[in-house]
Each structure stands twice: as C-alpha cells, then as structure tokens.
Image (cartoon, rainbow, N blue to C red; front, side, top):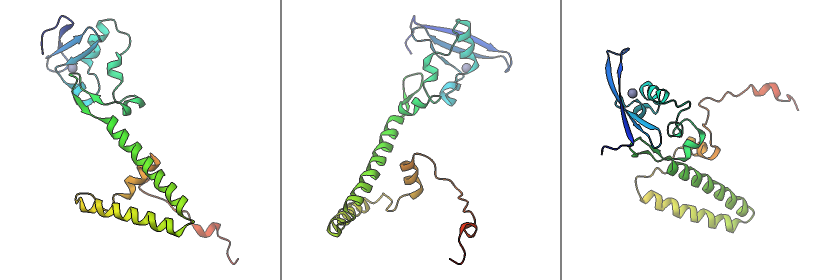
Length: 177
Ligand SMILES: [Zn+2]
C-alpha cells in the first residue's frame, strides 16, 4: 500500500500472547483500521488491538465501518468488503436472486389459480412449463426436480424444520361418526 499521511500506524506488543507484535493501521479519515493479526478479515470481528487503538483515540463507539457487516439486519442487503475494499461476498446478488425466486413462485401460483377453471388454459400452461423444463434439462448441469426443501425455504423465507412431530390424530378424531 502507498504510504499515506491519513494513515497512522500503531505498533502494539501483546504481553498476554508471547509478546507478539501487532501493527494497527488506523485510517484517520474514516476511523477504520486494519491489524496485522487479520482477525477482522478472518472472523469479521475487530480484534482487541484495533479496539485498543480506537479506545486510545478516544472513540467511544465503534466506527460504522465495523458495524455494517454481518451484525445488522441490513448487512444481508450489502455486499461484504474487506478493509482493503475487496469484495468478499456479494450478498446483494444473493438477495436479488431470492427475491426473484419468490416472485416467480407467486407468478406461477397466480397463473395456476387463474387457469384452474379452464382446462384449455391449464393445458397451455402445462405445455409452456413442460417446454421450459425440457430446455432446462437440455442445459445439463441443472437438477430437474431441485431441492424441494430449499425451494420452500426461499418461498417461506425461513428454514424448513428438520423434524416434524405429528400429534396423535386419533385423539381429535370423532370415532364412529
Ligand atoms: Zn489485531
């Protein structure tokens, strides 16, 4: 990296861990920092060396740069970058795909419910879906049936339970009627 007057390098000696030396680069313009221990890059949690520098600089709360990734709900909507500005994970795209899939399911359900009273329409829709299915199958690497659980998870936006307990139906059944 190019030396920059906006960057202050603080060298810390960690007496708790074999007097290991760590260098924290503090970016003065936005109060972000990176540490040679790379804990933030590895785990997404600022290390105590960074925290120590922040505290020493009189910062009472963690700069926004450290809060935006992973720890907030909004993080899901943002691409994840490391401190060097490299894209780690493009969650925006993931979210967009999820939205698209949800929308597609709702369109399919709408089509089916619109067509269900007209057999010709149902046949047309079936043909259309079948045609598309064939074209997907011809692309080879796509799974024909997909993972039903995953599809439901996308649709419901929550995980499908691994175990479903079915209560004893006989208890609520009216016997002999
Ligand atoms: Zn560190």
